[in-house]
Amino acid sequence: MIIDRNSVWGQIVRGFGYASISILTLFSGYMMQNGISTGFNISVLAMLILLSIPFFIVYGFTYTYSTEEKHFSVYEPFGIGFVISLLGAIIVYQNVKNNYSSDDVLLTPILVYGILFNGLTLFYLVNTNKSKLNHIRYQLIWPVVLSIAISLYFGMNYSFLSEDYRAYIPTALIVISFFISEFFAMTKRTFLVFQLCSLLVVVILISILNYSKITPHNQYFTSLIFCIILSAYLSAFEAWRIISYVIKNDTSEVGDNSKGANYYYASLLGLTLSLLFIPLGFIFTRVGVIFLFGFTIHASASLIYWLKQGRDYKKIGNSEWNVQKLIFGFMFVIILVFDSLMPIYPEKDVLPSLIAKG
Image: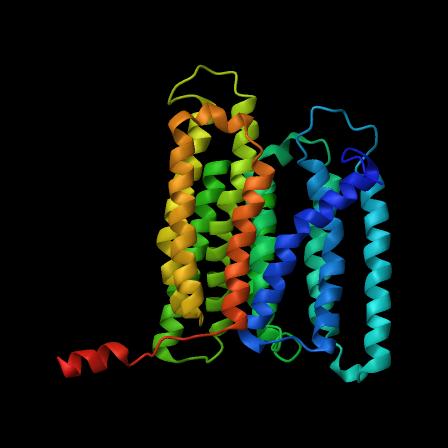
């Protein structure tokens, strides 16, 4: 039986589709630090995933660009999805308690992860049908930070989240940043400046703390910065879908000053900047040779492809970008997964030894 994509169950299936990259990101982040998952760890990660599903259902419903009118509200797929995810999480939790020591159940990270996702879900539900959700920060920035950066961070720091409360401080700063931007109702430009300045301040503080050796726990901040940089790169592919919709509905004159052209060049600039900053992120975490080579190929292909599309950007509006952005996103996350499964790290003393031989 084929499910109508514009039905309630179609929206639920769409939500699971949106969650797929986040799920892969969570598992790849875990494997980057802990290797192959055990039965217990898979169960805990499954609980994290289940608690995040309602967010993706609401997000998929809110930003589904369809010519067909929806004959139901967002609360219908959300309600069904919430019940399914909650029951699933309870079943998995009971299985964990019955088969493993109760002391091993990581309740704190599970609850925090669930609160983060469902908190943003509640925000979208409260603001349903409001024009503010059309802002790029709600369509792209916050969803990508949550679904990619936070998921990767929780995966990478899985073993610390139940033992060290300081592992939650970087996440708390993101939440505070969200509330500050909402409280002051920041404009697009103010929001961008505020976030960039906040990131710069954090980087400076990390550098000072590392130099002064005040605290040995800066890896949490540096880890999150790396995750944010990777999420910024992946956000470029989600932006392709948004830009295709903007160009398709752009009624302004054709030319470099049209709305569609401005969005295209902005995304091209964002993709280019993320390519420049990701190598800096290598300093903050340990990635293998597979990721380094894989990212080089992936980034080059992405940039060439987007530049080629820009030769006649009006055609972008007629392309099926949901499929294309998923292909590029999956390929990137799969590179992370392979790097985690087969970690090959470069020797740190290769360059000095070559210099000595010379």
